[in-house]
Image (cartoon, rainbow, N blue to C red; front, side):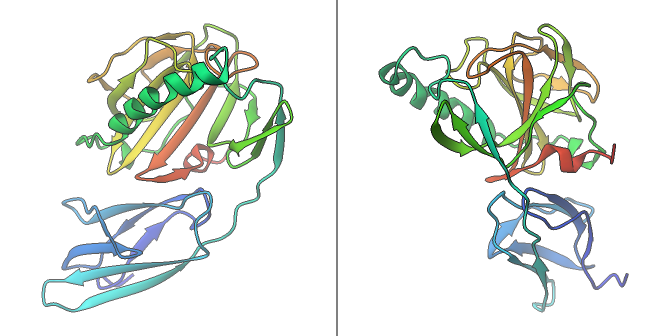
Length: 254
């Protein structure tokens, strides 16, 4: 590869994440006309949302005022329908209670996702937070007791209540909800740097607190069934900036 070209590793697919290196001399990057964060050694991340368009555009601006462009073809995902025997309002006892509580919960989640740490966890090869059967797939359209909901935005791993789960990569804890949220239950969020973050839902217990620096493989919580859950499992969701991505695609082939 010429230093004057983009280098990228990973698959450009809906729900996927790629890591790239900018052309030599790049001073700024733009992805679909939005500024893209660039590390000091020239690397960047791009996440493709579950509903990303089939084409994307990457532009590097060089010091001499010239630019290098690359068009990216984004492959479609393969989504399925999942029926879930759970109330769409989760841990709330009524729609009114759900509405009363939800706005404050969403505000906490948004604030956590706005945190930008200097973690280099994004550079690591991610590991599974725990072993177990994958019981829910990213991107699936969910039907809750006959009521259509939003698509499933993470990967579910079935495991016994109380089983430890670990950090899939280094990061900084941005939210540890010891008071259970209506849908997420005891929610833990970790920033891995460069706009990449993980969320772990339905825990029975959280073992770290906001502001803690965690290392890959460190025990951070225990599996539960809090919030909107039909049984004990861990929901692992990931976002790159505003794009929801599939955690399974970050793991080595199993």
